[in-house]
Image 1: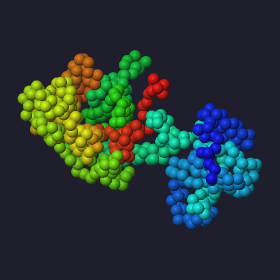
Image 2: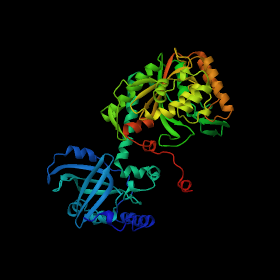
Image 3: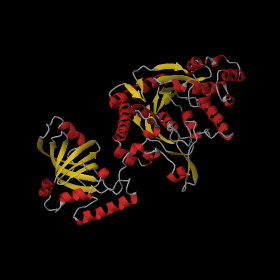
Image 4: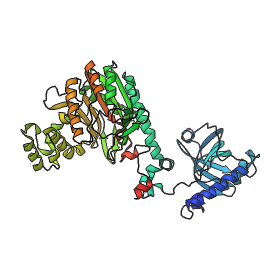
Length: 515
């Protein structure tokens, strides 16, 4: 069976410039034949997946008189004189087109040589509209038995022969539109991403939360320790920051009288790029008045398990070959206990920082000299020895106050705060506090952070005076929660890299990469 893949247009024998020139010539030929190679619309009555499902039991050789109209992209062509078979792909899947010269030219009598034009002037990659009936061929392939067709969009560039075989992996991200065309599983990832976020919004709406948008451009960066992007407003003649969190404005809403608010939106942090980090990413932050971090643990379980059940239909998933059980309740364990399990070190027993550092070195920890407090050292031990071992869903609780400037002091453990992070497959997926509502304590912590900024810490920030003013009007006891959408999508769609979960991840320009 001859195929387009073996015809002279193949990238192996022709340059892209030559292919493009050939296809431009076909555009002109289509125009001369009375066809519009860039159409305005097409009436679509059915999609490929619907037809495959509806006629799954149709017997070989059987035809159904019902007429259908579909549209999609040609993925393959097989031409045999007076007969041709195309594979057509729409958003839902693929279906074969059964193209017979006599039938087409009878139905399209007003367009002489319609079948020959179809053979000679179409290519893999073109977008085609067809009308016809349903037939299953003798070989068992469900097909649209075409009566009429129209070239809706003539493609000028060929699809790659072996997209997954490209050595330049970044090209899949750079030309995501091509990746989506030739890899249906990539389209499925982003379809599921949309379903995941829709499920989260729907669940929160059912629980009485409302979504309120907060500013992306801010006069003070805050709500997290991260290096911000800086931009400039020409009219106001002032520097502004792209937000690094939605936290401080959502808390202002709680001060203003809302009791359950959230926002699902983009966050920008001027930091490293890796399989787990992208400088532009998506979070959902949720705040509930009169709640604490224990309530947020229950809410976190409910949001994630509801999304998994809605989208995947199960709480038992596989991530990169490892089975993950999302069935609640999830393990809850303190940072101190986890570090002691993995290192044998009980950081609550050290009297001095020097003593703690020596014990940490003896236990095999690295870079301990940079830690300025025992709390910082505890966190360093956790990141080095514990984090990557937390495969099943685990709430790590009760963090050092030094690394949690916006969390309420623990009600029974001095030096700690009421905070948890959720880890799954060794990655932080959610972060939550019993929110700090004492404006005096909050000022002291923000001023300490400002001192670090003055000393050169690029992730520390200035004091947000307006936020402190809001706290002085009084914020009720509040539980706050942030969930990383990209990492959750990675988990629920089995993506190894965050770039696979983001439709258009940030990449260096090609010339810069070559340099």
